[in-house]
Length: 450
Ligand SMILES: Cc1cc2nc3c(=O)[nH]c(=O)nc-3n(C[C@H](O)[C@H](O)[C@H](O)COP(=O)(O)OP(=O)(O)OC[C@H]3O[C@@H](n4cnc5c(N)ncnc54)[C@H](O)[C@@H]3O)c2cc1C
Image 1 (cartoon, rainbow, N blue to C red):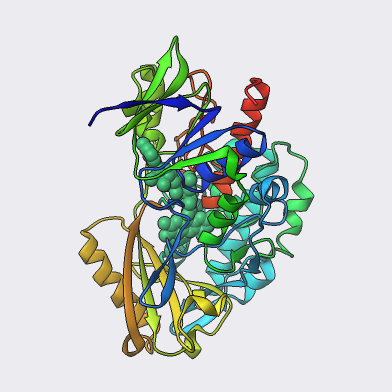
Image 2: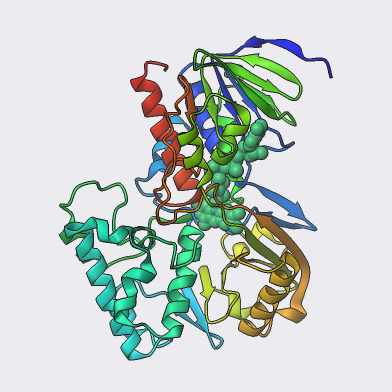
């Protein structure tokens, strides 16, 4: 195909996932003419909702964290003209032998959490207090894996399964690879933004009062965040090129000058890359070997989600919130999505998504095992399924694991900035993507680019 020369833009954003869209929104509101290039036909990446036989499924079950004063809220306040509406996320439950119990976040809840024997609950309480005390006093200890941290307490097999399940869902990695700080941050005990050692008291108070009040689910499906961001972009400041893949970064004297796609060449003195950082070396020869080696260390996790459309609403799934089931080799996190927004399922029907990690074995084997686990955990479900929809996805571009460092949003190439869930370790998913955009914007301001 003949390549055409194209006009230049103030900024080019590679990728129209949520981090690319948020970057494009911020830059366009700063008055920049932005070009957004996306290799897929639809914007949103992993932040999408689509219809399957009358049901509206998300790209995986989502709970948006840190909504109260977190990074997404900051970006919404500063740049969104059309604002997504969030429904409180409700409770996290643990299902065991066909009963649901609230996930224990406080010492009081843990004392009543009889899914684990009393001795194990004491172990959990002591280790939680120990870990939080170390956050203030000896933070390096928390870089150890949660398994390393816990093993002195000699937890029973069932407790380890619970910890392993939480590790997978918070970091994408097992308890042997997940740093202890990740578990504390993900469960709301510590503030991952807090670089000081002065919030010991505040952290300890969380043992008596900790909840998910700042988490939410967007009405209309997860895509409504993407849609609100896109619709907030001033029309005359943005151009979208869909179905076009960036193949190469154009540089001169280690400074970005534009991009080459499979269809065109575009010029700009500012480029924001939101694809996988692992793939960055394939787009440019201008990276030092040491930097490339760090990028190669980034690990990804593959997840499997099964969406079930149910002929009727089941009493077993009548709650607002989500559940985990952990006493199995295929633990899941499930969310009865249509309980948050009834429009996501046809009238009087129910939509529920079950997600697990693909650790080993074939995809078919994992699908079979996940279904077996679900049918055992919720006996009434199988005969009510009228839709089955399977998704295999990479939830975050890099898992937070021990000994791994994410690259900074400021790349070694001048005026090339990096955003997405592999450039900031704080929180998860969309919140993490939002943190990365805020950090990248700070660098751009400091560098005088915007
Ligand atoms: C099962 C599952 C559960 C999840 N649960 C949660 C949750 O509870 N809470 C939460 O906050 N998040 C959750 N997430 C994660 C969240 O959806 C993602 O982390 C987030 O959407 C990632 O956004 P991103 O912009 O960083 O990356 P992506 O969505 O991957 O976007 C990157 C975009 O760049 C495009 N691209 C890449 N390379 C190129 C190129 N060379 N040229 C052109 N385009 C390119 C891609 O096509 C893509 O559209 C979950 C995800 C899954 C799959």
